[in-house]
Figure 1: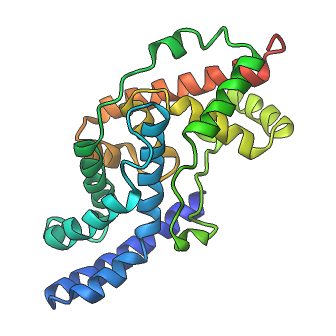
Figure 2 (figure 1 turned 135 degrees about the vertical axis):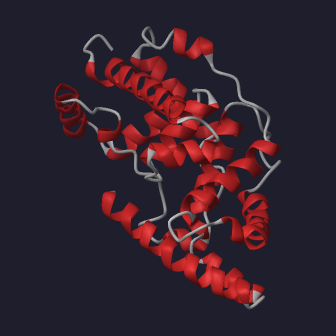
Length: 252
């Protein structure tokens, strides 16, 4: 995962240089072709945000498509490339712009209090039923771009290291790795994330999936670093507790 993140940062830096050059030449066709090379990463993020809104009943299926937002992003980046001061800022700039486009269009999501108030009491059959309904009604609605066939871009990587961070917790993570396949853990993590408030969910996704630092996330979210850190800690705690209750406690 760390190698993938570093690769993305290198690609973003190289892309920034070419985008600036094409903009200075007023060559929008070449600008757009260059931008297409990094679009799958953004498209995946938009698709996950839209899937979450569908799952939470905040968005009807078919109301939006990821292309609605990525097409607008082309225009935003071309018109505002001068706002990016150097090659290190393009990555965060893209996510900040697409976040603004999304939040201008989507209904503000409410925290699912009932779900989290009862998270310690759900039995294994209840968890399985929720996961089945989630997979049927909300997850995977949007088909990725053809470029998403690239194995480095085609799905999220929820690594347990982002949830279990102390030495004691890492022992629990090893037990999970030994007893469950990766896809099962990912489905559970996404199910729980989709019921968090927007701030916690987005901060965790930007940190765990996209590899942004707390400072970069604060910039993307127009928040303070302490606010971002608080949201990340809350998200981790909820995810850790839900995983332990569902998969690691014998009573379940």
